[in-house]
Each structure stands twice: as structure tokens, then as C-alpha cells.
Length: 216
Image (tube, rainbow, N blue to C red; front, side):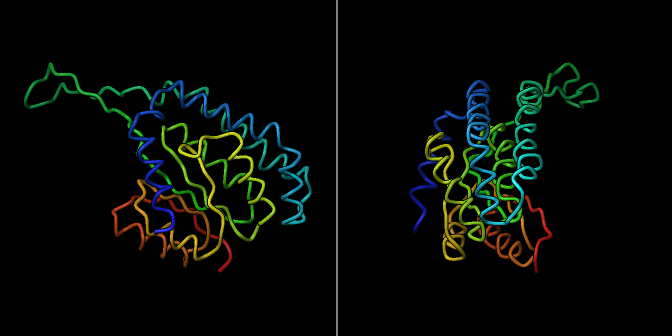
């Protein structure tokens, strides 16, 4: 299938534990921060080309919001990633035993983003995906082509494609992507498409995160 090698390259990278260390997660979050900060003017320009939205609005509502999310994750990541102790005082087996919840990353994540807030809907969810120690394939909306072109060029420049990569295209490309086995799928958009995403995910028992609304 069209994207099988891409997905498997990310899976191999993930299984090597390259994305697992907290220092690596912080490093890649700082890379995302640098990418957005160094190119925020261009991000505003392409959104204006696609949506005729004022660059000051994009700066405030998309760029700064995403940068704020990165800072929040960097501040709390050590705490969130630490094992959580579980009370075993009522255990019928051994009340002196120690038990912990260990937070492991899932693996290869597919992020399908909408057109209406192209910067934040591509990169805001990416903060959590990378902070949790996953790899990510991003499918930006073909309805914001100037933004998608810039995203592809920036991600190629700043990230290892085994860690983060962009796939462009429309319905055929999205359909081909959904034939692959992912470890999690995140989709923002309209319910009719969400049903297609969930149907594809169900074939592999892939968990999904859906933010629904959009144009019907």
C-alpha cells in the first residue's frame, strides 16, 4: 500500500525507544517551538492566502496558543510522565506490596487536521503526541493548500521523518493512510468523515480521538 513503508519506518523508530526518554521528548518539543517561532510570519501569510484571515488573528489564536501549549507541556512533563503509586493497603493478596501505573507512549499516531485553523489544528495536538513519546504522521487539509505546502517544507527541515512527517493530498491519500495500522488516530472535523475514520480504525482496534463539528 502507498504509505506502508512510511508507517513501518516510524514504527521501527518508535520500537527502538528513540522517542521514549524524557530528554528526547523535551528536545523535540523545543524543536517544534523553534520551528513555529522562527517561521511565525510565514505561517500568518499562508493562512491569509488560504482563508483571508488577518495575520494578527493567526498570531494570537494559533501561533501563540500553540507556543503556550508547548511551554505548559515542558513545565509539567516530568510530573505527568512519572509513575503514579497505587494504594495497595486493601489488597487481598499482599497489603505491603507496591504497585504503580506506568505511562507508556502508544506508538505511531495519525493526525488528520481540518482547514479552518490550519496552524493550531496541525501543531497543537502534535504537542501532546510528541510529549507523550509517540511518532506522528500529519495529514493537513487539502482545503488550505498554501498552509499545507509550508507545513510540509518546515517539517522536512526541522524533523526526522521517522519521528514527524507530513502527507499531503485529498480523499484518496487519506483513504490509503487509513488502510494502515496506527496505534492512535486523532481527527478533527465533521461527523460523516469521523464515521469513516472510526470504521477504518475498528479493523485494527485502533483507539481514536475525535473533535467533531465542522461543515456538514
